[in-house]
Amino acid sequence: MPIDHKNRFYVEDNKSLNRFVSGVIKISEEYIRFLIYRGRISSLGNLSPFDTAVDLLAELFKVENGCLVYFKRHFEKLDTIPGSEEEYTKALKQFIYSATLNNLTHIYKLIDPVANKLLRNLKAAYRGENYLVTEIFLNKYVHKKDVAFASKECIDRDTLLNRIIAKNWTVQTTAKEFLACVFDVLESQDQYLQAISLNDLLNIYKELFAIKGKTDFIGEKVSSDIHHKLLFEEIRKGFVVKLNNYLVKKRFSEKERNCIYNIIDDVINCYLNGTQRDSVKELVNRYYGKNGTDSVCYRAEYAIGLLNSEIITLMQKEEMRNVERLSK
Amino acid sequence: MSKDYLNKIINGKDKLTGELGKEQEAYREFISGGWKNEEENHTGKIITFLPENFHADKVAESGALIVKMAADSRNSGKYKKETYFYVSEDDTFALKIDETVTAEDSSLTAAVISESESDLSECVLYCPETNKYFLRSQGKDIILTGYKNFDYQRFTFKLMYPKAKIFFLTPKDSDVYTLLSDDASFAVNKYAIEDGNIIAELDNSENIKVVTLKSETCIDFINIQNGKLTIPLILAGSKFELLIY
Image 1 (cartoon, each protein chain N blue to C red):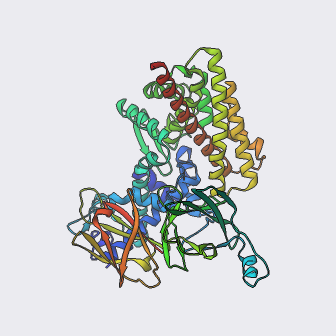
Image 2: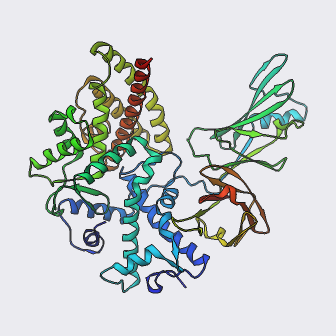
């Protein structure tokens, strides 16, 4: 007997449970692959999409009184009971995408500890301020009040980043202040939706932290500038090795690889010189050519995200060393 | 996930607008499958390493050539270190074996080198001549034991990727394992806890060479006999996986 909503997710034996769990994991694995392709999460480390799906959904497979209790509860709450097999499959997929997206942040601890900390602060800030969160398919959105998602599109990440920088961003020291600044920008215009995807929020916050390191760096100006330059050279060398591993592993073409290396070099130079980097689209057009596809942009965005995590990690280490030196 | 929005995206036929339209486009791209690219699949793959000068060495056996395989050697009275290289048939992987000899002891350490940055963390190394399997330690090296009296430089080694994985998961507030196999032909039929061990019965144990357990804290070999796996509970924990080779 198959495990499904018709038999209230009753588990007859291990074999049928194994078959059901495998099917669920397969759906989640495919969704995770797509999120990786879209640059929503990284595929760092040795965690394959399959292993990630297992990690994220393990909790769902709790058997109570012979039934998969979470699946049973979910389907009991549905307004419309799926009639056909096709409807059931769609409802099941919807539940699995939702559960995967909801648990996604759990793996940040493993794949990007910097993002994990920043995300934790952002979550505490928007929960504390009673912001609303809406999940759709690819993204979770944070907004202050109800918005009509069909009315407008969200502002793109680079435009928002530049507007925040133009708004004297250096004063943004806490996640709460950063959020306030983001929504000041969003509310001061009516071309775009007054909502932001959690992914964009995190990446902008991360990039500001990476840039912020330059201005807030410890020490007097001259020595700080030299020190900072040396630090960025260290980052440039170390990061290229890491990036190379990623690019080889993901089997990027030579043209894509060269494009990403050039973009990273460009971004590091901008950070060093205190100038604003160009948008990802402009960078891809410059280094890949006008025929740069969306997938190249996703990969470039992802590589910049990796670079920012690397910078923040090294800055934090450097700050710790300075604190230790000063306390001696 | 907002049911209305996702319902509209999954079940609706009309083209949506605004941010919802972008999400709908993403969903349509997702189900089209056009974004997928072929990822290298290593499941069950076996890479055979031969001594670097294997072919020349065969000639040497017939008396025509003498090939010195040591790539690096340093001699001192108490300490000697030699390095031997083995390469895969397609030349994409290399195995480097360091032999360290001191007055008291000798040890062999192997490391796999790959240009493709393949994930080798789940591989085991097998030596057919001695029928021995070796696990990678926490780092990247593999400690080879039992070679003191052998002319191992002439041996072959095989790097084996798992052909299946079986996950044992315990959902929160549950003390029952949920089992999941990534290959239905190696599913666990039933399991029981006996004398401090999990005894798991496989549906099919044909062609299984060796099984390892991997958890957050350890990686070790697991005993298999007549399709029954004996997994010490102390190694298991609430979540672990069995790798089948």
